[in-house]
Amino acid sequence: MTTASRKEDLYELLPWHENDTLEGAEKEAVRALLASDLEANRQARELRVLHGAVADEPIMATNMTMNLRRLYARIDPPAPRRPRWFVPVSMAAAALLTVAGGFGLFKAGERAERFHTLTSPPAESLPVPANSVLFRVDVVAGVDAAQLTQLAGVAGVSVLQGPSERGVALIAVPRADAESVASRLSSDPHLRFVAQVPR
Amino acid sequence: MKSRQDGFQVKATAGQADDGEDLTCLSRIALGDRAAFERLYRRYYDRLFRFVLRVTGRMNLVEDVINDTMIVIWRKAGDYRAAARASTWIFGIAYRKALKALSRELRAPETMDELPEVEQPPSDELDREGVHAAIRQAVMQLPPEHRAVVDLTFFFNRSYDEVALILDCPVGTVKSRMFHARAKLRPLLTQLLGD
Image 1: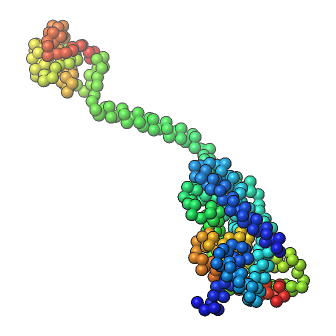
Image 2 (image 1 turned 90 degrees about the vertical axis):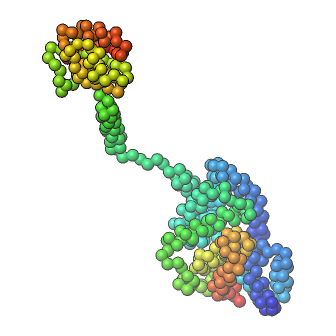
Image 3 (image 1 turned 60 degrees about the vertical axis):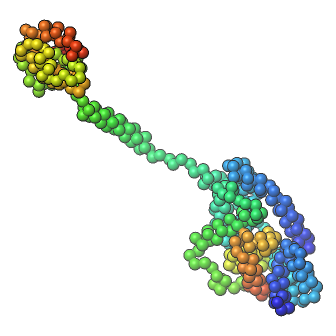
């Protein structure tokens, strides 16, 4: 490194000599330069004026508290305001969903399996013989319509529906034989349940 | 002038002593402590206000940049590593936010050549306050990166290493920016000093 370039390097350090943040060898080198170099002293005077001017500037800080409030508003943004129509529309949508859900469940139940209570009449489409009495019966597994007819033990008994997977069947029995057939079926171990149902 | 220099030294020493308080605040902020956050905000508001105003040169940007900076501190306090002073980390965030805000504001970045020449008043017409005002006006004509170096050096009394950390650039760049800033200010300073 030449003497000239060394000097240039030290000139570059003068600002930090001015603010007193140089340390060790650099500080000593700049001090030594200032003790002997006119140009370094000229620059140091300039820097002292610059330092004084920059540090002398009054701070024009604005309202810190107001700005802090704005900052908190950014950190914790308020919940978005709902428009006036939001509540009635959301209630209507909820009601619609409830109705649609109920209808869906109803249809799903219908698809799964038709169910008749003991007192419910058979479907109108079933061919019910005239002058007959209807019985709902529950048979054990493995009894089919033909066996059920045989178990009734009289002529003219017809199986209108079933037996279903659960063993439920609907049979029509001539009115004259209704009492004896009901008694026989009730005591037969192939049947778990026998009850007359209205037409 | 001597007394002012002494004042700088006192301020710088106090600033270093405050670093412990800054570290305490940052560690509590990392845990979501609002009171610590507000304490740090109040400790830094004036300093950041001045620094951001110096870098951007625009009053309308200052408050937003301060809040941008503080939001980063609120969210990233846990990322701070004490390799540098806490204030160096905070000023570094503020510097980047200030440059970003300024670039949004200005479609084309300012360059030294595009800036108007500073009108230099006759030195014999100026008192001390007038001289200082003229110099500050000239400093404001420098590019933001150069203004930041001048302000961090002469107002915040930072070493060139710390300036480099804050501006996230090599030490050589800091020295180069200071060199160019001084070259730009030299005609005015020479005239004011009557050399």
